[in-house]
Image (cartoon, rainbow over all chains, first blue to last red; front, side):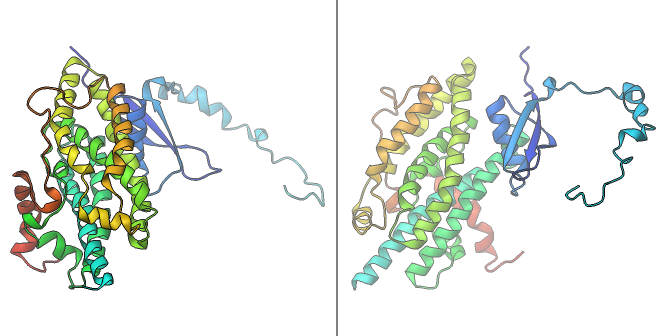
Length: 95
Length: 261
């Protein structure tokens, strides 16, 4: 039987120049061109963006919820990774 | 009639033609709302319909102003009868299946694109403004429809068959788009309007480019629609379908004059 359902695409929109693309949602489309058009119609009809990326959802490798602890917990007590242990020299501007 | 009054009468008739084209197709496309093959396409078709409705509102408002009889956009949209509508017959054709809707959209949007590009340089500031804004909208409509014509034409055996049938079914109604008459001649001469025959080459290149990518044939060479060139919309002569469309569109306004949300 032919696959009838259109593939899923993840949509990333850049709100304006200088900002990065943010994930805004997903949609179905038969191919990349249609996905881009659908993203334009569904996610930017109120001037939300100046650039769109569409990515086949299957192409995204995501971290697993099961690995949440080994992935993210160890960073919790490593305060020395934050650049907060410097004395800022007097007269240093633009920091 | 003074020259100024004659020009105003011409502008009224011309803005009405352009506005009726946009209004009738907008109404047709809204029939897809909540019925399109996918949610995403539903929104896309509604967006196109709303773009066209916006164009129609600006054009009918301007028609009312140039007429000088106090008619508003609503009066012109809701209180004229079938024979007073001067849209081309292409836009009133029923939606058919999705392929027919896309063939009709490609043919009409490619026409509007060529027309608005030229009309943006009109000596009439209002028409130039509507066209300059609209050209970006219709470029997207043409692209959206063209994408589907290619996808279906160069798709499965069934989608190819349906897309080919849709092109053959809609093609005869495209001839009317390029017909000149006295009105277009006068307005083109005044630098206000565009002579429709000037649009044919650009339109053909656009449409034939899409059709060839879609592995489809152009104009039907044989069969029942070859050589058939229906026309008359600009004179108020329509196919049987327009009356039903207007009945649905105008019913509420006529039953409850002045009704408000």
